[in-house]
Length: 208
Image (cartoon, rainbow, N blue to C red):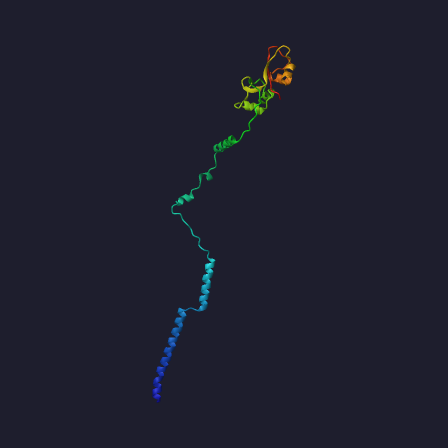
């Protein structure tokens, strides 16, 4: 082969080598661009997984479309305004009426009406007739024990009997007959002296 032929083929070979080199560079760059490094992919996947673990699961919120939003702002009136004094008194009255009041045993005897004497108290009247205060209250439910007045307040009491003094009925004998003391008969009849008169009517109190 002559030197002229070899020199003419040299540019062709050189051009071919350049083209192959260019194609190789293009192929390598494209692959790198389309397929990223595996290490980078692994790092990206780990980051996504970590992010999913950190972020809490969103809770589902249910909104009732039928409810007026303004209703949720309404505060019950009772929680803002305390009960008035009148309402509290009414409740206390109901509670008092609901309480069971124990029944008071009324002693046997004759019913008798008396008028409160001067200086007598409610408890004194009960004592004079052999009654307990609760028993006298039960016999007079409409009377205020602290509001009795001498000469005008009448009270219902229980007594043993009404005795009319006969011949020989001195106070001691009358007391023995009914099983009470002379003083009990004197107190029930507001007598200051141990004296009886024929025809006199004596109230005989209950036995204490």
